[in-house]
Image (cartoon, rainbow, N blue to C red):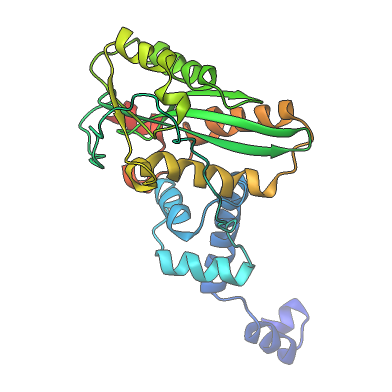
Length: 267
């Protein structure tokens, strides 16, 4: 055959020696898939979520192999950073009992909601974000942003959630003891729409752990790596993250690695 094709025997044996193995080819194909998922999710996914996404695509490799390939390619998910939460609970306004009592279990949507506030740094100053989360699907069903942390901020978030969910009754609405949530305006909204008010114990962030967890995810996956020039820029970026990514695409380990809306539609 070497004579027919006009090549030397030594040349053929050298080519055969350096022939790429099936394993190397398989790794090359897998690397492309891993990198595609990693970049599509803006470097937010580590091996556990990437393997879940690849299995949806029919890939059968193990999580350990994914982790090894990511390490070899230098792919590292965005790092976690600590952040502080500010809650103004030093007030004389009436507060609700802790009805939720850290029982985050549900059997359907609109049984238990949680609300909280966080802040976002911009070059113009602070931007405050209030959200309402359905504890069943972890979906952000209401949100509001403003330059000030007022009672209107949390009331607007609640009104959006009520409108989106078609005004359900007897939902447990859990928040911290902040003055915004203890205000007459917010408590009047709860009473008007037959919601069951619930508040965390003073200084206990674990009583509202799911809301805290969402803010942690938001800071890690978006805010910490951003430099917002204006509040409007931050608002647009946060809107895109919540409505275009978190609710629609981001896999959540607590709901079998589904996205919130995907989980709701499958339930």
